[in-house]
Length: 427
Image: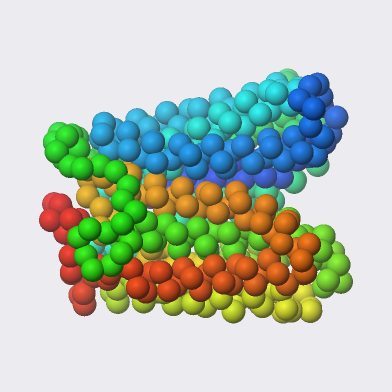
C-alpha cells in the first residue's frame, strides 16, 4: 500500500496532531523561561521556587497519565471519539492562551493541569480513531504515518519557540505583544487549527454500529491474560515495554550539564544530539510500520527493544560528541522499530468497542515514562555518570523479554490476521 492510498481522514488526524504537537512542544522551551523571567510571583506554598517550578512542569504529565484511561474508556462507551478530540483541543486552545494572562505560581499550576486534561481527553480517542480508519493490511504504516507527523510537530515546536521568544516584542494588527505572549498565542492557534481540521474533515465511523458494540462489549484494562497461555495481558505487556522505552528516551534531558561537561561540548552540540533521535523517528516510523504489515509486528518490536539495550548503555560510555550523536541515532531507529508495530499490534487486538481503552494503556505508559524518566535520571546520576543509562538499558532488556514471552503475533504472511477480535470486526 502506497502513501497515496492512505485514507484522507488519517492524514487529517495526523495533520491535526502535528499542529497540536507544535503548540504543546513550544511550551517545553517557553514555560521554564517564562517562570524564571520575573513575570510569575506570589505564594509558593512554603516551597522553593525551583521545586514549585518542577511541580508546574510535571503536573501536565502526571495528570494526563491518570486521566487517559478514563478518557479512553468514556470514548468507548459513548462511541463519540471525534467529540472527545475536539473538546480536548478546545481545552488546550484555552489553556495555552491563558498562560499569557498568568502572573502567579498558583495560576500556572491550574493552567498546566488544565492542559494535561486537554491532552488526556484528546490522545486515546485520536489513536483509536486512526485504528478504526485502517485495517490489518495497512495498520502499521498508518500508525507510523500518524506518529511521524506527531514527531515532526514535536521537533519543530522548540526550534520555533526559541526564535519567537528571542524575536519579541511584536506588533501584530496594531496589538503589542512580548515574545512570550506571541509563543502562547501560537501554541493556542496550533490546538485551534487541529480542532478545525477535525471538525471539517473527520466523522466517527458507523456511529450506530459502534454504539451497539460499546453497549455489549466488556470494556476495561486487563493485567493478567485469561485467554492465552501467557501470564500477562498482551496489551498491558506492550504498555510496560513502551514505558521502558519512554523512560530511556527521557533520561537525557535533565543531564544536559553533566553530558556537556563529560563530552567537552556546548549547548549547540547537545541540541543536535537531542534532535537526531527525533530525526530517526520522522524518517523510519512509516516504512517500519509498513514493513510490519507485511512481515509481522512482534519481530520488529522485540528487535527494536533489544537494540535499545546497547544503544542506551552506550550513551553513558561514549567520550566524544560524534559518538553520542551516533548512539542517539541508533536509539531513535530502535525506538521507531518498536513504536509503530507496537501500536499496530494493539490495534489488531482491539475492536471498535474498546480501542480507546486499549490505546490508553499505551499512550498512558509513554506519557508516564516521559514524566518519570527525568526524575529517575536526576536521582541515579548521583551514583555515577553511567548509572542512569545502564538503568535505561536494563529496562529496555526487560521490555524485550516481556514482549517476547507474553505477546503473541497477530499477523501471518500476507497481512492476514492470525487471531484477535479486530479480525472479526473489519468491514
